[in-house]
Length: 102
Image 1 (cartoon, rainbow, N blue to C red):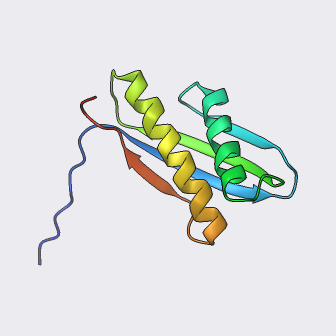
Image 2 (cartoon, rainbow, N blue to C red):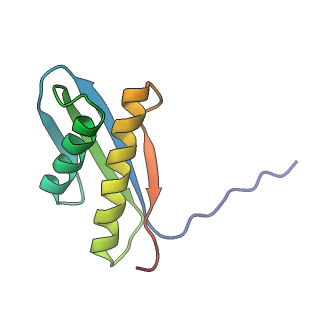
């Protein structure tokens, strides 16, 4: 039996969110734009009616791309999905591919 691995090309963003009772969002990221990531997490918590909570966002990028703006958009999507998944009780690790074209 032969197992094939799917080769991934391009860049992906991996986001994890852990919930806290302290109404503060801290960010650990390699993308460099902490304020945008924090704003997305706070907005997602507020839109779900949980604005009184906080947490910690861990954001990592895998792969390489020259399109910084596309990476930031993928990071925003990944953070929103990770916060929503955590509030649902699902796994908190979310991977979002960076779109190759604008």
